[in-house]
Length: 179
Length: 267
Image 1 (cartoon, rainbow over the protein chains, first blue to last red):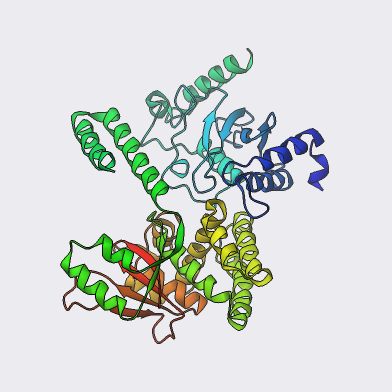
Image 2 (image 1 turned 180 degrees about the horizontal axis):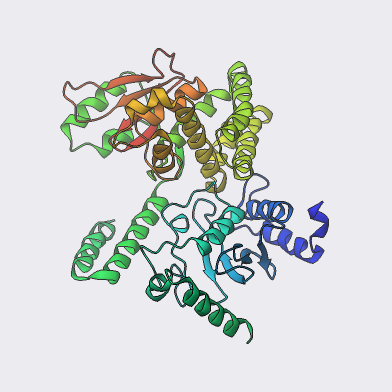
């Protein structure tokens, strides 16, 4: 059982959090955002090993997670690991989380501050998505950028020259991760 | 009060003078402000009020006044819902659950349908993990009607945004499931050359997307729950027209429609 792998300190912290759920502080049972996030955490740990994605709450705050995605095989990002930050609003899952790249990345749909342009993080968000499906979509986005509406024009233009593109990707990645 | 009415106007003028990004942001901020005002002024589901409150709202409008008089011959109370784009689902859900408080046979039938719906939706391709999350909360709410059939409880459930929105999502999924299951039948009702699947992901599943007749037809058919909708609109004749969904049903509850909004009516 994955639950046995849970850090007890974290579980306790998460339980404390649950009591101060922001939407319905006086609710005895029923639904709260933190309950949903706990369920997601469990499901992620059970289902997502080996898929090159992971995510975990930062410190003892269940509303703020750090995620990682590994570049898809046979893409220029292969075997590179990128960190992301995920922040969940009080109306999650009816409103999308705010997701940003923490590790600097050279990619047409990510700007210099790590902001991501992806439809499912904005107008196409659905309450049926979860952290797992979101990270998988971002993983796919790495290998299949949308070059029609780039945040990083230089990356979009360089995409057709895969050799030069990969060189820039690696330079940026190694510069960031060797610090 | 006067202050509230004046502010948005000056806001509009300010926005008019802006351009580009600043303008977009100002519009978004303005939308947020309106949403916040709606949130503060109406509960998700209100207490039952005498229908005369509606007459007061429209007292300067002769067409509506005449129709409200007509409505008063058959109905005496109203329960309002928040105008947040989910009002049909919230009004339908509350009104129907309220009938379940006193109708054990119907409650039993509904629990059967609700239980079965999870597998059906998963078979249609909805992601199991998130679907289950919504289904579980929905079932909890239905079971609490069985365990503790009190109106006070039901009002509390529906006014707790966390749970209430989950119920709305599940009703939206049930609606989407019905449309997709009988896509051949519903395709003809869909405008704009979209497939049923596209229509569902754009107009049915997302929160705050307003409901049209097709949503109502699909949901009432899916659950085999009949409702009557009374139309308070600008149509001629001075009478409130009613329509029953699904066709040929015996309506269990009545909703009041005003252009863009649904509330609950009581006799």
